[in-house]
Image 1 (cartoon, rainbow, N blue to C red):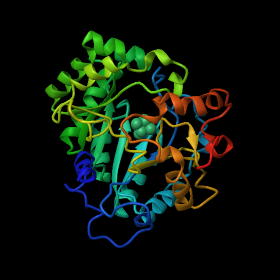
Image 2: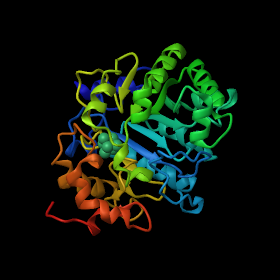
Image 3: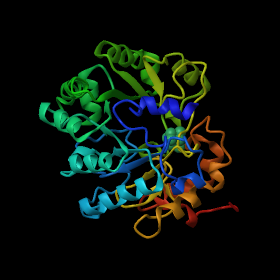
Length: 349
Ligand code: SF4
């Protein structure tokens, strides 16, 4: 039962309740099997201290005034719970730049969902790690791009970030939060041994890795060169193992397993800092805005769109040449992201 397995990775079924077991019927049941994992990725802000070249959020405006207010964010989190979401993943930008992040995590837990957070680690000291644990955060993914502190700090634009991130990993772990390193592999890192080095480093720290591979998205929208060739993928997959590193999620944690896109499998959806609904943070196309329409109506539209039925989920649709041909020009020429997919539909859904 693959969707049960992913709950383990995201901290379900341990201290957290298992929300989809023995629960009341929810609107999601019209679209998903009863025990199907459903995560809401909430990009709570696009603001960040870092300036990473690989950032999928780097093309979005960082306007704080357009973000959800605390009450607005809580209202949205309540909508997630009402719909039947299992886990809210706070994403950015850097989610800890929100003054109300602990309140939002606490609220998420109070109304029966698990909470996960991605962070660059810069703001996590002893107090913050304790506060996150006390608020009920189940899982944290902390970014480490390289085991070379200079490369990590230079790539992210913050001197001293590497040491701080390592400290954050140790503190979160010691406070009982399931802690993973989040990293990305590119061709240069893969072939130089730097990708393996981060996995080895994680083992020494006693944490697993979640690895991403290059996507035609964000600052790499026009960078064909970064995308892995079949030989790169073969090499990359040879580094995966259940106790070492997985590729995006637990479905692919060994060389024998296929990649699995959780978004096109209807296992997650994303709400941007401004209310737009997209399949995942890397996807620049929105299917509606939750400030204008009910969440269920937008998800129904998104999940019945042909891109959700044309893929077997074994590759990222963003890297699919046919998909890029249909949408890339529109995306490239946009003045603001995300752009609405219904402005660019080129065939019947
Ligand atoms: S579309 Fe799917 S595979 Fe691609 S980045 Fe998003 S979740 Fe991952």
